[in-house]
Image 1 (cartoon, rainbow, N blue to C red):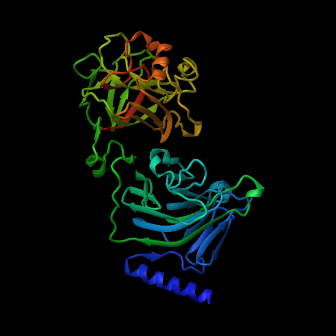
Image 2 (cartoon, rainbow, N blue to C red):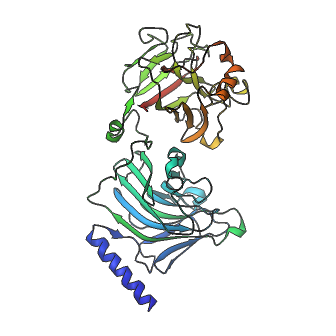
Image 3 (tube, rainbow, N blue to C red):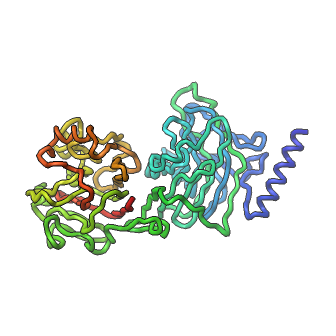
Length: 451
C-alpha cells in the first residue's frame, strides 16, 4: 500500500512539474540519468530520495547528471543530520579524467551545504579550482536559515553570468562570473578524515529544473554582489546605489593627494587596471598618493588589488588632507602588503601591519587559504556603518571590526604612530586614498555604495 501511495505521489509530482515548465531530474526509484564520479561514496535511490553515504578513504564523490545545463533554475530538498558532515550541489561543472593520477577530478561552481557552526550553507565555492568565491560571511542574515534533521529547500538561479542562491526561501549569495556557462549538475558526498565518520548520510529529493522562461527573483538591496567582471556593475547594483570609483579607462574622479590634478607620472591606467608603479620602495616619492575628489562618510567600499612580490600599499579612508604632512597622507588604512616578503609585516604590534589589518591599530584575523598570493587578484572590502561600526573583509572573510571613536579605538590610537594627530580617524567624512609606497600594486573594480 505504501509503495502504491509513493508511486502515485511521484506521478502527480511529475505531471505538475511538466505543466509548469519544470523537469524532474530524479524519477524517485532509480539513478537513471545520473552517474558517479571521482570517489567511491555509496549513492542509492531510497523511498523517493537519493541518499549518499560517506566511505572512509575515498576522495570527494559526486553523482552527476548525464546531461549538461546552461541557463536554469534548479530546486531540490536536502537533509543532513550530522554537524561533521559536508556536502554541496555542483552547478555548470566538469570532469577532468586525467587529474589525480588518472582517478579524475570534478571542478566547477558549488552550492555549499555546511551544517557546521560556520554556517556557510548556500554560499558559493569553486570545487577543484579557485576555492571559496562567496563565503556566507558576506550575508550573515542567511547564515541561520539551514536546519539540521529536516529537509531544507534549495533554489539556485543560473542565468547568463549571474548565480543567485536561496535556502528555505532566504536570499543568500549573488555572484557574477564568466568562468563557466554550461556543465553538469552534481550531488556531493564529501570525503571524511576519520573511520568513525563512515556511513554519514546526505539525502536529496524533489530535484527539478527549469530551462526556459527564466527570470531572477528579486534580491534585497543590501546583499553584496560579488561581481567578477572587472569594472562592471549589474543593473541591480546601479539601482541599489553602487557607483564605480574607477571606470577602467580614465583617472576621472581622482587627483594627487595635496594636488589639484592627477599625477603626471608614477601611475598607469592600462587594460582596465589602475597601477601605482614601483620606485624602489620609497613612500610617496614617485607619483605620490591619489585620492577621490569626492568625500564619503558612511559607505560600503569594495576593491580588487594585486601586488607584486614584496610589495606595500594601502587603501585609506577618512582622509581629510588637513595635516599637510610629508610622505603618505593621513587616514585609516586597510593595509595592502605581501606579508611573506615585506619587512613591515613583522613590525608594529601583534601583526597589526599585515595584509587587511587596520594599519598600526588592529591586526587582521585571517587564514592563509584566503590570501591570494602575489600575481593573483584579491578582493578587499571596507564597510563603515552609520553608527560608526567598521568592518574589513578579505576575499569574502570578515577579518576585523571596531567602533570608530569608541574608548577601545582611542586607546589603540594612543599607543600607535597616530597619537600625534588630534582626533585621528574620527572626521565626519573624508576622501578614499590609494597609497604610493614605492612598489608596483594594481587596483580595479573599485566600487562604493553610500549607506
